Length: 498
Image (cartoon, rainbow, N blue to C red; front, side, top):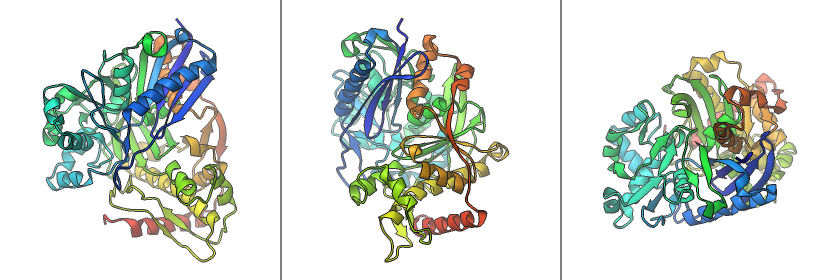
Protein backbone atom coordinates (compact mmCIF):
# COMPACT_ATOMS: atom_id res chain seq x y z
CA UNK A 1 0.00 0.00 0.00
CA UNK A 2 1.14 3.53 -0.78
CA UNK A 3 1.72 6.09 1.93
CA UNK A 4 0.24 9.16 0.25
CA UNK A 5 -3.32 10.51 0.32
CA UNK A 6 -4.92 12.29 -2.63
CA UNK A 7 -7.51 14.93 -1.70
CA UNK A 8 -9.81 16.19 -4.45
CA UNK A 9 -11.26 19.61 -3.61
CA UNK A 10 -13.88 20.49 -6.21
CA UNK A 11 -14.92 24.08 -5.52
CA UNK A 12 -17.21 26.71 -6.97
CA UNK A 13 -14.65 28.45 -9.16
CA UNK A 14 -11.81 25.93 -9.38
CA UNK A 15 -10.84 22.32 -8.85
CA UNK A 16 -7.77 21.37 -6.84
CA UNK A 17 -5.92 18.21 -6.00
CA UNK A 18 -3.52 17.97 -3.07
CA UNK A 19 -1.20 15.07 -2.35
CA UNK A 20 -0.50 14.71 1.37
CA UNK A 21 2.43 12.86 2.89
CA UNK A 22 2.01 10.34 5.67
CA UNK A 23 2.96 13.09 8.17
CA UNK A 24 0.07 15.29 6.80
CA UNK A 25 2.41 17.72 5.06
CA UNK A 26 1.68 18.71 1.46
CA UNK A 27 3.75 16.95 -1.20
CA UNK A 28 2.10 18.33 -4.34
CA UNK A 29 -0.69 20.65 -5.41
CA UNK A 30 -2.50 21.52 -8.62
CA UNK A 31 -5.40 23.88 -9.24
CA UNK A 32 -7.45 24.82 -12.29
CA UNK A 33 -10.22 27.38 -12.65
CA UNK A 34 -13.21 26.67 -14.86
CA UNK A 35 -15.81 28.80 -16.62
CA UNK A 36 -18.83 30.20 -14.81
CA UNK A 37 -22.01 30.38 -16.88
CA UNK A 38 -24.66 33.05 -16.23
CA UNK A 39 -27.50 32.40 -18.73
CA UNK A 40 -29.88 34.85 -17.01
CA UNK A 41 -29.78 37.31 -14.13
CA UNK A 42 -29.52 35.34 -10.90
CA UNK A 43 -28.76 32.07 -12.71
CA UNK A 44 -25.40 30.31 -12.25
CA UNK A 45 -24.37 27.11 -14.02
CA UNK A 46 -21.31 24.88 -14.42
CA UNK A 47 -20.41 22.55 -17.26
CA UNK A 48 -19.99 19.12 -15.69
CA UNK A 49 -17.59 17.98 -18.41
CA UNK A 50 -15.39 21.00 -17.62
CA UNK A 51 -15.41 19.99 -13.98
CA UNK A 52 -14.64 16.34 -14.73
CA UNK A 53 -11.79 17.08 -17.13
CA UNK A 54 -10.34 19.62 -14.71
CA UNK A 55 -10.46 17.21 -11.78
CA UNK A 56 -8.68 14.45 -13.70
CA UNK A 57 -6.06 16.94 -14.92
CA UNK A 58 -5.27 18.37 -11.48
CA UNK A 59 -5.03 14.88 -9.97
CA UNK A 60 -2.39 13.88 -12.51
CA UNK A 61 -0.55 17.18 -12.16
CA UNK A 62 -0.55 17.05 -8.35
CA UNK A 63 0.93 13.55 -8.44
CA UNK A 64 3.53 14.73 -10.95
CA UNK A 65 4.39 17.72 -8.73
CA UNK A 66 4.71 15.37 -5.76
CA UNK A 67 6.98 13.14 -7.88
CA UNK A 68 4.91 10.03 -7.21
CA UNK A 69 2.90 7.52 -9.21
CA UNK A 70 -0.75 6.62 -8.70
CA UNK A 71 0.38 3.33 -7.15
CA UNK A 72 1.87 5.36 -4.28
CA UNK A 73 -1.60 6.66 -3.30
CA UNK A 74 -3.21 4.74 -0.44
CA UNK A 75 -6.65 6.35 -0.69
CA UNK A 76 -8.66 9.27 -2.05
CA UNK A 77 -10.75 11.81 -0.17
CA UNK A 78 -13.27 14.03 -1.97
CA UNK A 79 -14.73 17.35 -0.87
CA UNK A 80 -17.01 19.45 -3.01
CA UNK A 81 -19.13 22.55 -3.46
CA UNK A 82 -22.40 21.63 -1.77
CA UNK A 83 -26.01 21.91 -3.01
CA UNK A 84 -24.99 22.18 -6.67
CA UNK A 85 -27.16 19.85 -8.73
CA UNK A 86 -25.83 17.36 -11.28
CA UNK A 87 -27.96 15.00 -13.36
CA UNK A 88 -26.63 12.54 -15.89
CA UNK A 89 -27.70 9.66 -18.10
CA UNK A 90 -27.30 6.32 -16.32
CA UNK A 91 -26.12 4.47 -19.44
CA UNK A 92 -23.88 7.02 -21.13
CA UNK A 93 -22.79 9.07 -18.11
CA UNK A 94 -23.40 12.25 -20.10
CA UNK A 95 -24.90 15.24 -18.26
CA UNK A 96 -28.50 16.00 -19.22
CA UNK A 97 -28.08 19.69 -18.36
CA UNK A 98 -25.43 22.00 -16.99
CA UNK A 99 -25.07 21.78 -13.22
CA UNK A 100 -27.24 24.31 -11.39
CA UNK A 101 -24.96 25.96 -8.82
CA UNK A 102 -25.74 26.61 -5.16
CA UNK A 103 -25.67 30.37 -5.85
CA UNK A 104 -28.45 30.08 -8.44
CA UNK A 105 -31.72 31.87 -7.58
CA UNK A 106 -34.02 30.67 -10.39
CA UNK A 107 -36.29 28.74 -8.02
CA UNK A 108 -37.09 31.68 -5.73
CA UNK A 109 -40.71 31.77 -6.92
CA UNK A 110 -41.03 28.02 -6.44
CA UNK A 111 -39.81 28.38 -2.86
CA UNK A 112 -42.28 31.21 -2.26
CA UNK A 113 -45.13 29.04 -3.56
CA UNK A 114 -44.11 26.19 -1.25
CA UNK A 115 -44.06 28.62 1.68
CA UNK A 116 -47.50 29.94 0.79
CA UNK A 117 -48.75 26.36 0.66
CA UNK A 118 -47.57 25.94 4.27
CA UNK A 119 -44.72 23.52 3.62
CA UNK A 120 -41.75 25.36 5.14
CA UNK A 121 -42.26 24.00 8.65
CA UNK A 122 -42.35 20.45 7.28
CA UNK A 123 -39.09 20.93 5.40
CA UNK A 124 -37.37 22.62 8.34
CA UNK A 125 -38.46 19.99 10.85
CA UNK A 126 -37.21 17.14 8.70
CA UNK A 127 -34.10 18.63 7.08
CA UNK A 128 -33.03 21.47 9.38
CA UNK A 129 -33.05 23.75 6.33
CA UNK A 130 -35.19 26.65 5.16
CA UNK A 131 -37.13 26.80 1.91
CA UNK A 132 -34.60 28.68 -0.17
CA UNK A 133 -33.24 28.40 -3.73
CA UNK A 134 -29.80 27.79 -2.18
CA UNK A 135 -30.55 24.10 -1.61
CA UNK A 136 -30.67 21.27 -4.14
CA UNK A 137 -34.27 20.07 -4.07
CA UNK A 138 -36.04 22.87 -5.95
CA UNK A 139 -33.20 22.93 -8.50
CA UNK A 140 -33.83 19.23 -9.16
CA UNK A 141 -37.56 19.88 -9.50
CA UNK A 142 -36.87 22.74 -11.91
CA UNK A 143 -34.66 20.54 -14.07
CA UNK A 144 -37.25 17.77 -14.19
CA UNK A 145 -39.89 20.27 -15.27
CA UNK A 146 -37.84 22.20 -17.83
CA UNK A 147 -35.58 19.70 -19.61
CA UNK A 148 -37.58 17.96 -22.32
CA UNK A 149 -38.23 14.28 -21.58
CA UNK A 150 -36.22 14.33 -18.36
CA UNK A 151 -39.09 13.59 -15.97
CA UNK A 152 -40.05 10.45 -17.88
CA UNK A 153 -36.43 9.28 -17.84
CA UNK A 154 -36.22 9.99 -14.12
CA UNK A 155 -39.36 8.01 -13.41
CA UNK A 156 -38.06 4.96 -15.29
CA UNK A 157 -34.67 5.21 -13.55
CA UNK A 158 -32.55 6.03 -16.59
CA UNK A 159 -31.08 9.24 -15.17
CA UNK A 160 -29.28 9.87 -11.89
CA UNK A 161 -29.08 12.85 -9.55
CA UNK A 162 -26.20 13.74 -7.32
CA UNK A 163 -24.29 16.54 -5.74
CA UNK A 164 -20.84 17.01 -7.27
CA UNK A 165 -19.25 14.33 -5.08
CA UNK A 166 -21.71 11.75 -6.43
CA UNK A 167 -20.99 12.71 -10.03
CA UNK A 168 -17.22 12.47 -9.49
CA UNK A 169 -17.48 9.12 -7.70
CA UNK A 170 -19.71 7.73 -10.44
CA UNK A 171 -17.18 8.79 -13.10
CA UNK A 172 -14.10 7.70 -11.12
CA UNK A 173 -15.58 4.25 -10.47
CA UNK A 174 -16.69 3.81 -14.08
CA UNK A 175 -20.35 3.94 -13.09
CA UNK A 176 -19.97 1.24 -10.44
CA UNK A 177 -21.14 3.37 -7.51
CA UNK A 178 -23.96 5.90 -7.17
CA UNK A 179 -23.34 7.13 -3.60
CA UNK A 180 -22.95 10.23 -1.47
CA UNK A 181 -22.16 10.95 2.18
CA UNK A 182 -24.43 12.15 4.98
CA UNK A 183 -23.16 15.75 4.93
CA UNK A 184 -23.91 16.27 1.25
CA UNK A 185 -27.26 14.50 1.51
CA UNK A 186 -28.17 16.79 4.41
CA UNK A 187 -27.89 19.83 2.12
CA UNK A 188 -30.29 18.65 -0.57
CA UNK A 189 -33.53 19.47 1.32
CA UNK A 190 -34.70 15.91 0.61
CA UNK A 191 -32.83 14.03 3.36
CA UNK A 192 -34.29 13.63 6.85
CA UNK A 193 -31.40 14.39 9.20
CA UNK A 194 -33.12 12.62 12.09
CA UNK A 195 -34.18 9.35 10.41
CA UNK A 196 -31.13 9.45 8.09
CA UNK A 197 -33.20 8.52 5.06
CA UNK A 198 -34.43 10.20 1.91
CA UNK A 199 -37.83 11.51 3.00
CA UNK A 200 -40.81 10.17 1.06
CA UNK A 201 -43.09 13.04 2.10
CA UNK A 202 -40.68 15.71 0.87
CA UNK A 203 -40.13 13.86 -2.40
CA UNK A 204 -43.90 13.71 -2.84
CA UNK A 205 -44.30 17.47 -2.27
CA UNK A 206 -41.56 18.20 -4.80
CA UNK A 207 -42.62 15.45 -7.25
CA UNK A 208 -39.10 14.00 -7.37
CA UNK A 209 -38.73 10.25 -8.10
CA UNK A 210 -36.74 8.37 -5.46
CA UNK A 211 -35.10 6.27 -8.19
CA UNK A 212 -32.68 9.07 -9.10
CA UNK A 213 -31.21 9.43 -5.58
CA UNK A 214 -27.83 8.04 -4.46
CA UNK A 215 -27.14 5.71 -1.52
CA UNK A 216 -26.06 7.65 1.59
CA UNK A 217 -22.95 6.51 3.48
CA UNK A 218 -20.93 7.72 6.48
CA UNK A 219 -18.28 10.36 5.74
CA UNK A 220 -15.66 7.67 6.22
CA UNK A 221 -16.63 4.60 4.21
CA UNK A 222 -15.87 2.51 1.14
CA UNK A 223 -17.20 4.72 -1.67
CA UNK A 224 -15.75 2.53 -4.40
CA UNK A 225 -12.50 2.32 -6.33
CA UNK A 226 -11.19 4.86 -8.81
CA UNK A 227 -10.27 2.91 -11.92
CA UNK A 228 -6.70 2.58 -13.09
CA UNK A 229 -7.54 3.79 -16.60
CA UNK A 230 -8.42 7.20 -15.12
CA UNK A 231 -5.70 7.91 -12.56
CA UNK A 232 -3.10 5.25 -13.34
CA UNK A 233 -3.89 2.72 -10.60
CA UNK A 234 -6.91 1.36 -8.76
CA UNK A 235 -7.29 3.60 -5.69
CA UNK A 236 -10.00 3.27 -3.00
CA UNK A 237 -12.15 6.31 -2.18
CA UNK A 238 -12.43 6.31 1.60
CA UNK A 239 -13.54 9.80 2.59
CA UNK A 240 -16.22 12.24 1.40
CA UNK A 241 -17.65 15.41 2.95
CA UNK A 242 -19.18 18.64 1.71
CA UNK A 243 -16.65 21.46 1.71
CA UNK A 244 -17.77 23.21 4.90
CA UNK A 245 -18.07 20.01 6.89
CA UNK A 246 -14.68 18.93 5.56
CA UNK A 247 -13.22 22.22 6.81
CA UNK A 248 -14.83 21.60 10.21
CA UNK A 249 -13.09 18.22 10.33
CA UNK A 250 -9.82 19.71 9.06
CA UNK A 251 -9.98 22.34 11.81
CA UNK A 252 -10.40 19.47 14.32
CA UNK A 253 -13.63 21.00 15.64
CA UNK A 254 -14.66 17.71 17.19
CA UNK A 255 -15.93 19.00 20.54
CA UNK A 256 -19.35 20.64 21.12
CA UNK A 257 -18.99 24.42 21.24
CA UNK A 258 -16.09 24.58 18.77
CA UNK A 259 -16.65 27.15 16.04
CA UNK A 260 -15.07 27.51 12.59
CA UNK A 261 -15.61 29.84 9.66
CA UNK A 262 -14.36 29.38 6.10
CA UNK A 263 -13.84 32.43 3.91
CA UNK A 264 -13.90 31.36 0.30
CA UNK A 265 -16.33 32.43 -2.42
CA UNK A 266 -18.89 32.67 0.36
CA UNK A 267 -18.47 32.46 4.12
CA UNK A 268 -19.74 29.48 6.07
CA UNK A 269 -19.67 29.30 9.85
CA UNK A 270 -20.34 26.02 11.67
CA UNK A 271 -20.80 25.52 15.40
CA UNK A 272 -20.46 21.93 16.66
CA UNK A 273 -23.52 21.09 18.80
CA UNK A 274 -22.62 17.44 19.40
CA UNK A 275 -25.50 14.97 19.41
CA UNK A 276 -27.98 17.83 19.85
CA UNK A 277 -29.76 18.72 16.60
CA UNK A 278 -30.59 22.27 17.67
CA UNK A 279 -33.72 23.78 16.15
CA UNK A 280 -32.87 27.37 15.31
CA UNK A 281 -35.22 30.20 16.21
CA UNK A 282 -33.01 32.70 14.38
CA UNK A 283 -33.11 31.28 10.85
CA UNK A 284 -29.85 29.38 11.06
CA UNK A 285 -29.54 25.90 9.60
CA UNK A 286 -29.46 22.68 11.57
CA UNK A 287 -27.16 20.35 9.68
CA UNK A 288 -24.94 17.29 9.95
CA UNK A 289 -21.35 18.19 10.82
CA UNK A 290 -20.15 14.64 10.13
CA UNK A 291 -21.23 11.03 10.55
CA UNK A 292 -18.61 8.51 11.64
CA UNK A 293 -19.22 4.84 12.50
CA UNK A 294 -22.95 5.47 12.25
CA UNK A 295 -22.85 8.21 14.90
CA UNK A 296 -24.02 11.67 13.84
CA UNK A 297 -22.58 14.94 15.10
CA UNK A 298 -24.74 17.98 14.36
CA UNK A 299 -23.98 21.65 13.82
CA UNK A 300 -25.62 25.02 13.53
CA UNK A 301 -24.59 26.70 10.30
CA UNK A 302 -24.79 30.21 8.98
CA UNK A 303 -24.17 30.88 5.30
CA UNK A 304 -22.97 34.15 3.79
CA UNK A 305 -23.22 34.10 0.01
CA UNK A 306 -20.59 36.75 -0.75
CA UNK A 307 -17.17 36.81 0.91
CA UNK A 308 -14.23 36.31 -1.42
CA UNK A 309 -16.69 36.87 -4.27
CA UNK A 310 -17.10 40.46 -3.07
CA UNK A 311 -13.36 40.99 -3.37
CA UNK A 312 -13.53 39.49 -6.86
CA UNK A 313 -16.17 42.15 -7.60
CA UNK A 314 -13.71 44.84 -6.55
CA UNK A 315 -11.13 43.33 -8.88
CA UNK A 316 -13.19 42.25 -11.89
CA UNK A 317 -16.31 44.42 -11.66
CA UNK A 318 -15.20 47.78 -10.33
CA UNK A 319 -11.58 47.13 -11.32
CA UNK A 320 -10.27 49.18 -8.40
CA UNK A 321 -7.69 46.52 -7.45
CA UNK A 322 -5.45 44.35 -9.61
CA UNK A 323 -5.11 41.48 -7.16
CA UNK A 324 -7.40 40.25 -4.39
CA UNK A 325 -4.73 40.66 -1.70
CA UNK A 326 -4.50 44.38 -2.48
CA UNK A 327 -7.85 44.96 -0.74
CA UNK A 328 -6.36 44.65 2.75
CA UNK A 329 -3.63 47.20 2.02
CA UNK A 330 -6.21 49.69 0.69
CA UNK A 331 -8.50 49.09 3.68
CA UNK A 332 -5.65 49.85 6.07
CA UNK A 333 -5.19 53.23 4.35
CA UNK A 334 -8.89 54.19 4.45
CA UNK A 335 -10.08 57.36 6.16
CA UNK A 336 -11.20 56.27 9.66
CA UNK A 337 -13.67 59.16 9.81
CA UNK A 338 -15.74 57.76 6.94
CA UNK A 339 -18.27 55.07 7.82
CA UNK A 340 -19.07 53.38 4.51
CA UNK A 341 -21.16 50.20 4.63
CA UNK A 342 -21.49 47.67 1.82
CA UNK A 343 -24.35 45.18 2.09
CA UNK A 344 -23.19 42.56 -0.45
CA UNK A 345 -26.61 41.17 -1.37
CA UNK A 346 -25.58 40.55 -4.98
CA UNK A 347 -27.45 37.23 -5.01
CA UNK A 348 -29.67 37.88 -2.00
CA UNK A 349 -28.82 37.62 1.68
CA UNK A 350 -28.19 34.36 3.51
CA UNK A 351 -28.37 33.72 7.25
CA UNK A 352 -29.87 34.98 9.42
CA UNK A 353 -32.01 37.07 7.01
CA UNK A 354 -32.69 34.69 4.08
CA UNK A 355 -33.92 37.36 1.72
CA UNK A 356 -33.59 36.02 -1.82
CA UNK A 357 -34.80 39.28 -3.39
CA UNK A 358 -32.47 41.68 -1.57
CA UNK A 359 -29.78 43.24 -3.71
CA UNK A 360 -26.47 44.89 -2.91
CA UNK A 361 -26.32 48.44 -1.59
CA UNK A 362 -23.71 50.87 -0.30
CA UNK A 363 -24.33 53.52 2.34
CA UNK A 364 -22.39 56.47 3.72
CA UNK A 365 -20.77 57.59 0.47
CA UNK A 366 -19.36 61.12 0.31
CA UNK A 367 -17.37 63.09 -2.26
CA UNK A 368 -14.28 62.04 -0.32
CA UNK A 369 -14.99 58.31 -0.68
CA UNK A 370 -12.31 56.47 -2.66
CA UNK A 371 -11.29 52.94 -3.53
CA UNK A 372 -9.74 52.72 -0.05
CA UNK A 373 -13.04 53.24 1.78
CA UNK A 374 -14.89 50.91 -0.59
CA UNK A 375 -12.28 48.20 -0.06
CA UNK A 376 -12.57 48.63 3.69
CA UNK A 377 -16.36 48.41 3.54
CA UNK A 378 -16.15 45.24 1.44
CA UNK A 379 -13.87 43.46 3.92
CA UNK A 380 -15.79 44.73 6.93
CA UNK A 381 -19.05 43.39 5.44
CA UNK A 382 -17.71 39.86 5.82
CA UNK A 383 -16.81 40.56 9.45
CA UNK A 384 -20.21 42.13 10.23
CA UNK A 385 -22.01 39.17 8.73
CA UNK A 386 -19.92 36.74 10.78
CA UNK A 387 -20.85 38.72 13.90
CA UNK A 388 -24.52 38.37 12.94
CA UNK A 389 -24.08 34.60 12.69
CA UNK A 390 -22.32 34.26 16.04
CA UNK A 391 -24.99 36.38 17.72
CA UNK A 392 -27.73 34.15 16.28
CA UNK A 393 -25.90 30.97 17.35
CA UNK A 394 -25.54 32.25 20.90
CA UNK A 395 -29.27 32.96 21.00
CA UNK A 396 -30.12 29.51 19.65
CA UNK A 397 -27.92 27.25 21.76
CA UNK A 398 -27.04 27.68 25.41
CA UNK A 399 -23.82 25.73 24.82
CA UNK A 400 -22.58 28.54 22.57
CA UNK A 401 -23.14 31.10 25.31
CA UNK A 402 -21.39 28.95 27.87
CA UNK A 403 -18.37 28.32 25.65
CA UNK A 404 -15.53 30.80 25.59
CA UNK A 405 -15.73 31.58 21.91
CA UNK A 406 -12.64 31.27 19.77
CA UNK A 407 -13.16 31.26 16.03
CA UNK A 408 -10.95 29.02 13.89
CA UNK A 409 -10.67 30.44 10.38
CA UNK A 410 -9.55 29.20 6.99
CA UNK A 411 -9.98 30.03 3.32
CA UNK A 412 -8.35 32.63 1.11
CA UNK A 413 -9.50 35.69 3.08
CA UNK A 414 -8.01 34.25 6.26
CA UNK A 415 -4.61 35.20 4.83
CA UNK A 416 -5.48 38.90 5.24
CA UNK A 417 -4.14 40.09 8.60
CA UNK A 418 -6.20 43.28 8.34
CA UNK A 419 -9.46 41.36 7.81
CA UNK A 420 -8.76 38.87 10.59
CA UNK A 421 -7.93 41.64 13.06
CA UNK A 422 -11.13 43.50 12.16
CA UNK A 423 -13.05 40.22 12.51
CA UNK A 424 -11.67 39.75 16.02
CA UNK A 425 -12.50 43.37 16.86
CA UNK A 426 -16.12 43.10 15.74
CA UNK A 427 -16.69 39.66 17.28
CA UNK A 428 -14.94 40.73 20.50
CA UNK A 429 -13.38 37.27 20.49
CA UNK A 430 -10.04 35.67 19.56
CA UNK A 431 -9.59 34.48 15.98
CA UNK A 432 -7.17 31.60 15.38
CA UNK A 433 -5.57 31.03 12.00
CA UNK A 434 -4.08 27.53 11.61
CA UNK A 435 -0.69 26.58 10.23
CA UNK A 436 -2.40 24.55 7.50
CA UNK A 437 -4.94 26.73 5.70
CA UNK A 438 -5.93 23.92 3.32
CA UNK A 439 -8.32 22.65 5.96
CA UNK A 440 -11.04 21.56 3.55
CA UNK A 441 -8.72 19.20 1.70
CA UNK A 442 -7.04 18.22 4.98
CA UNK A 443 -10.41 17.16 6.42
CA UNK A 444 -11.18 14.62 3.71
CA UNK A 445 -7.55 13.57 3.58
CA UNK A 446 -7.86 12.64 7.27
CA UNK A 447 -11.09 10.72 6.59
CA UNK A 448 -9.36 8.72 3.87
CA UNK A 449 -5.99 8.43 5.59
CA UNK A 450 -7.29 7.22 8.92
CA UNK A 451 -9.51 4.60 7.27
CA UNK A 452 -6.52 3.47 5.23
CA UNK A 453 -4.64 3.06 8.51
CA UNK A 454 -1.80 5.46 7.75
CA UNK A 455 -3.09 8.59 9.55
CA UNK A 456 -3.97 8.93 13.26
CA UNK A 457 -7.42 8.42 14.76
CA UNK A 458 -9.73 11.32 15.62
CA UNK A 459 -8.11 12.11 18.95
CA UNK A 460 -4.62 11.84 17.51
CA UNK A 461 -5.54 14.05 14.56
CA UNK A 462 -6.93 16.76 16.86
CA UNK A 463 -3.58 16.89 18.65
CA UNK A 464 -1.81 17.68 15.38
CA UNK A 465 -3.77 20.94 14.84
CA UNK A 466 -1.39 23.91 15.14
CA UNK A 467 -2.09 27.64 15.31
CA UNK A 468 -0.21 30.04 13.06
CA UNK A 469 -1.48 33.26 14.62
CA UNK A 470 -4.08 34.45 17.12
CA UNK A 471 -5.80 37.80 16.57
CA UNK A 472 -7.15 39.40 19.75
CA UNK A 473 -9.76 42.18 19.92
CA UNK A 474 -8.31 45.68 20.23
CA UNK A 475 -11.30 47.88 19.36
CA UNK A 476 -12.91 49.93 22.11
CA UNK A 477 -16.41 48.87 23.09
CA UNK A 478 -17.99 52.21 22.16
CA UNK A 479 -16.56 52.05 18.64
CA UNK A 480 -17.61 48.41 18.23
CA UNK A 481 -21.15 49.19 19.36
CA UNK A 482 -21.40 52.18 17.02
CA UNK A 483 -20.10 50.27 14.01
CA UNK A 484 -22.39 47.28 14.60
CA UNK A 485 -25.38 49.61 14.94
CA UNK A 486 -24.48 51.25 11.63
CA UNK A 487 -24.29 47.84 9.98
CA UNK A 488 -27.66 46.82 11.38
CA UNK A 489 -29.23 50.00 9.98
CA UNK A 490 -27.67 49.40 6.54
CA UNK A 491 -29.02 45.84 6.39
CA UNK A 492 -32.48 46.99 7.47
CA UNK A 493 -32.52 49.47 4.60
CA UNK A 494 -31.59 46.71 2.14
CA UNK A 495 -34.00 43.93 3.12
CA UNK A 496 -37.14 43.36 1.08
CA UNK A 497 -38.49 40.99 3.72
CA UNK A 498 -39.51 42.93 6.82
